[in-house]
Amino acid sequence: MTSTVSTSEKVGESSGARGQDVDRTTPLLSVRDLQVHFPLKRGFIVQREVARVKAVDGVSFDIYPGETLGLVGESGSGKTTAAKAVVQLNKPGNGSVKFEGQELVGLSTSAMRPVRRKMGMVFQDPYGSLNPRMRAGDIVGEPLKVHGLADTKEAYREQVASLMTTVGLSPAMAERYPNEFSGGQRQRLGVARAIAARPSLLILDESVSALDVSIQAQILNLLQDLQEKYNLAYLFIAHDLSVVRHISHRVAVMYLGKIVETADAKDLYERPLHPYTQALLSAIPTPNPVHERSRERIILRGDLPSPLAPPPGCSFSTRCPIATDICSQTVPELKTLAPNQQAACHLATSV
Ligand code: SF4
Image (cartoon, rainbow, N blue to C red):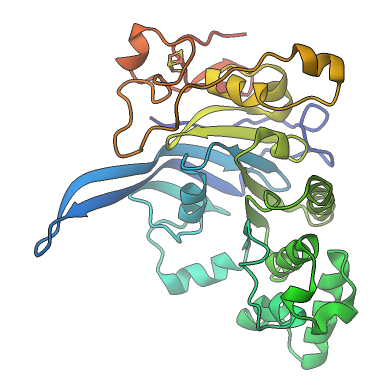
């Protein structure tokens, strides 16, 4: 199944993210029918394939310059595997990944190097993703050296100082080591490193999940400021719909390797059409105590099934509160049910 996030309109007021309108004329990143399958092998002497794990199974989406696509789903749904396939850290078994019009699938490591310069990555763990033996300035400046972006030592020092200032850190902190920074400051360092080579796309993999809520808000504000300033596009991965709400223009919900719903952020939060999205949204507490008391939670049965043995038919059928006979027999296709909103559910209807 192929699930596609694509429109030809402009969004702004109606989106979850603040900032300028997104021009959806030409996608920066275009992913089509992406498949990442891992073979499961057994045998002591001769190993043979006994099964295939369909970690990502026919995912498609577009991201436009200056746009944030929130990619949401439980742990094990395939979000990170899909992101790694975008930057070719996982080799897709099938599908197409076009960045600035260039096909990346099949590119050699050396041919990928200049492309990687334009794709920054920020990881979840601000503690583990920074080399503890490197000074902050060297961490931030490393991409400048790797890609030859500073001609002189003076230019290098100036750029490092400017990057640190841009992410809200004092240039005087460049001499410190990562353990001398707080969690939020380390994530700012991670962002500074990710934007050092002047990318046009940042992949943010659970980048604020490990932080306190107040620090999360500061990093999200920083990311939105940077997006406005540099017209950066974000693929923002999170397991929690509440985290991506205010930063995403569009949201795609993944379940067991597939996109099951995608929509402009405002529509998805106001009118979720897929039962899985409805369940995820029902779990988010509201700040209004009156609404909170009357909030109806949809409790999902059981855990995410193993991608080694996905249920037949709809992959959500074992946990869906409204499943019927057809659900375990036929795979639902991703259908357009409203302008800019698609869902893969037999029972979801047009609105
Ligand atoms: Fe639930 Fe059936 Fe829709 Fe799947 S197709 S989400 S099981 S109602």
